Length: 256
Image 1 (cartoon, rainbow, N blue to C red):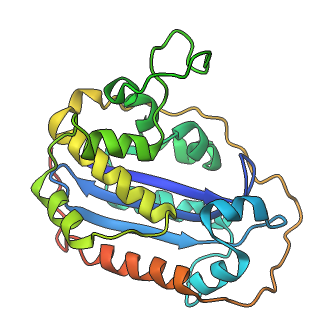
Image 2: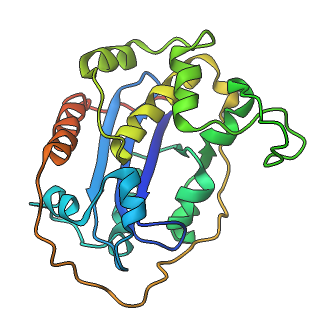
């Protein structure tokens, strides 16, 4: 089985521009087969509030895009993420909070794969009690876990699942703390998924996705003239990607 995890950092809620798109493809043994990691400019006016969350300011985006050979905007480049998944013949695509991330992909992209939402799919395994009066999940005893909460339960807590040896090797070699950009979140989800595949595969219930696509709201492309601003943040992001790419298996083998 070949699986993929993906994550977006965006310029706001549904209908905003995607600023970074990341995905990791791996096999059941935890071997990383491929990495997709690209940064984009927003079509609409930059949302400074959202930037305070993920740290991707206009200047940092410019620095991270130095030497980039892909399109400036995700709305022009999403098809290459689809080709990336198709090239590896992925059997299932996973996102944490799938209903949000998949809304940035057109229906044609969603229709090409089977999907699983780790946030909803791990709710009962994580078993995090809802706050009193929280009716977000009607009739349920537990709340949807945030990605960090899922990592704590599946990878670190008393109910942690045993990792494949390859996952454990990569975790030990990487170590350290890194910016929580989309590629880092993908690796955290990879850590969770490889453990689930090894120990609790029954939780994986891949299905077609029919999440409404929210196209970019703005009809005016605002060209950014902000000069690139390399800093410790952008250098750590680049270093993290280089280190993670060093673990890509050179001769991927498909497993049944």
